[in-house]
Length: 169
Image 1 (tube, rainbow, N blue to C red):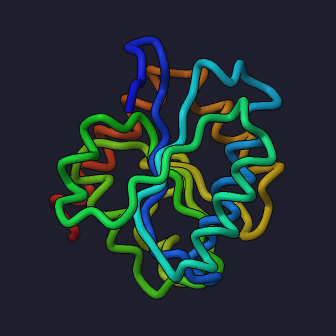
Image 2 (image 1 turned 180 degrees about the vertical axis):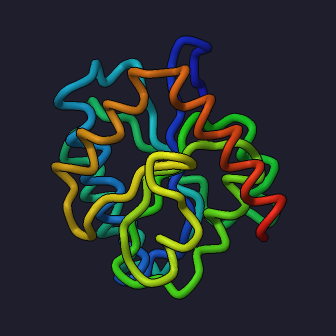
């Protein structure tokens, strides 16, 4: 991906259907780039959708070219990507469970996720990650910036997330 050791990698995983809110993750990342040096962060989007959905998301990402967004496409072994990621960003509009959250937490990743469906039962707000309102990229970008600025807090949330994921899921 060309990520430098000094850069932080944010991961967003999901198919490109409207309910998964990948567009919200991209817009949140763009807000992050307004408050943090864009060269210090990168967003990797793992997943796919129809050609039209992919084009729409690529067009959205291209609106702020200084904010590096890499589209990895569908990945069979997504768990192998998690060790390279510093923070998991999950911004669906609808979500019954959120398997990607338990996978992220099992890898000791702190998460920022929307407060919808079953997500609040998985992400223990302020302990394993931070919950945000759905469709709020401005606020989500600021919350991500806040968490990225505090590596000790990210590490503590990641460790607690791993403990919770192994114990409960």
